[in-house]
Image 1 (cartoon, rainbow, N blue to C red):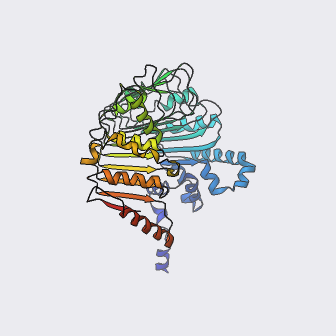
Image 2: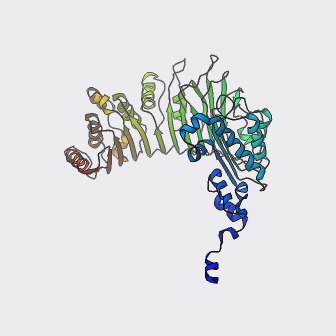
Image 3: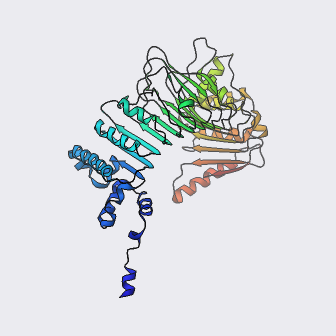
Length: 464
């Protein structure tokens, strides 16, 4: 009997509160609350876990059917808000490491105000808000958000122009800042970064609503290491002008620049940058001597890895250098890896033109999209560009992703096999069916590849 009693002993419940809090903090807060039914020992433990994660969509997925939600979504939303209230009322732990709130339905602004003020009083470290509001954030609340001394991570996604550019910022501990659906209100947004966020390492700015008057985005920081700027094509600029961008970050290592609105880059200084991903809509200036693309690419001249996300961006670079005679792309002396997409004849011509500026390139990654739309008549135009220097000295690896084994894809493969003298490895990724049919197709393609002439004797071609 003594042995049976020893075996049935509840050892987990005898663990200290801090350990139990740590264990159940890995669960969504709603599931953590379910542990309260285990015993009186567990009844209120969930309310004091270090991480609180409230996701209205997960709430529905776990506990409601889509039919019930359609008929009673207001009732469910009220229950969700009441649950969040209850957790705060029961919470005994004075500090809070992480608070995450996501809700795609509109929440009572007074509730939001009370929750966030409660969180900010608990030495919050990470705050992640993705919510809908009927009104702007109260000025007092926004001031509290941007003057919290303990915040290390702040992520805000507030649609419908609820998030205004802050007038006062003091975030001495902040290292990660994400601002989504940002509404530009001040003439110069971001001028507070260097003073208000002295240790900031990651910044993500995304505007998806109409912009006000002509404004400026200034990113000037000595500590910033990762930067993402997004202005989608449906970001509407005012008639007064565009958005001017100034980039001055001496320690920046990674840049993602996705801009399809009327953007002007007037200054860029990124001496430590090693990798970048770019996708933009080019627009020549009135004097026809410079463009945003020109300034951006010159600022990227020291990078080691470049990802040109859209084939349209690649074509824009080629058109710019062709049309604006006084403008030339820089020489990328440190670039060893280039990734890009091809979709038209113009894009392959643009790629070869760009490769003339990459003398020490070692790896080329190509995603070939919709090759059936290509015309083969322009392939002979490649001879106009000659052979890029990297084909003769450094380019050793090429990876090509093909939608299908089409004639245009074959032409791309043939071109690189016939012109890259030091190529050691070419990997071709195809959408091949599994099973016997797929193996037969792969074997057929390999046999065809063996017939392609190649200039490099060391080159190994693989199909995956």
